[in-house]
Length: 397
Image (cartoon, rainbow, N blue to C red; front, side, top):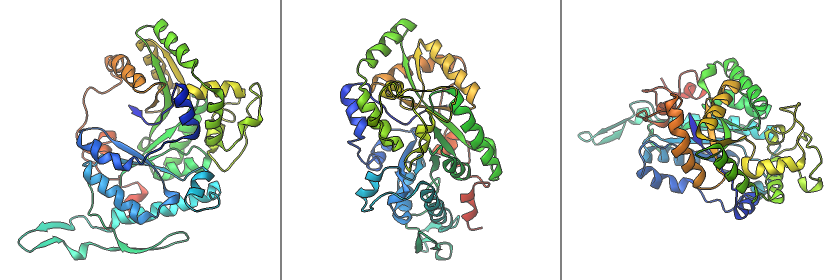
């Protein structure tokens, strides 16, 4: 499988934009329009649960699931920037582990709304009786917890998937436990197989401990592909891109991810693990996850400038396909979360040159599976959460 998720730029302007991570428009407003122009594309939206009550958010996602005919996913994030918290009227973001405590309760509320408020068969659309839904099968959700209180029915009738496909990208220990319980798809990132493989194995083991199957979670790892018709063309393209990397901008971006002020360090200083309240996995990817590799600040700046936190595969279509297959075999990931060096060139090159090679190797589909996003990713005929998922426990029998 291959996915497209995160973005990194290779031009000077792109480097500045990504350093401060603006402008960032609201993607939810674009989805309904894109859904009308596409048939099979899935829309995975990153929405931070820390800054919006679950009640309006659940309605918004149900509405999008209706408008897309069941092609919506939610990348669950808890936030990691104090600047975001201050923008929402808070003095600072809550501590890392507390954010996950809030997330656990948030999931309880949205499961109750999506899965439990409307029974199966509640909507009858009976014109003769002038009944849209059976009142006895529509229920108020009552929740009185530490962080959220609700006493109301879900405002949207059940959508094709009810609960959107659940993505998660936290790779800290607490994040992996959350993923093992809730996520159907997990985004991870790291510059080497030695970084990625232990995380994948740990997530699958935790899933089993949570009563799920190891294969219930589809894992995507971040990667950037720079491909040419032959190796020489790809290397020349890579070298051209590298000329535009701005180390200062790259380190500003890395500082935002990790909560570490890299302006205090020299380029030849080694990068050491420091625990912060920001994205802990971002610094782990270049330190604790691979103790055999010591990165300097300058090396991190060059790598982040094009590859972000993932590997950069450079070569001919055959060489890139070999590298992708080797990563799958070495790490047990299910697919890749493609970033770009230049937009839309990187994706156009991949589609034109790499996809046909993967199809020849029977590593990439030749047609789309019908149905919802969940059915495309997992089993045909299963648009809803499986019975062993904790969200299914909130259904009314």
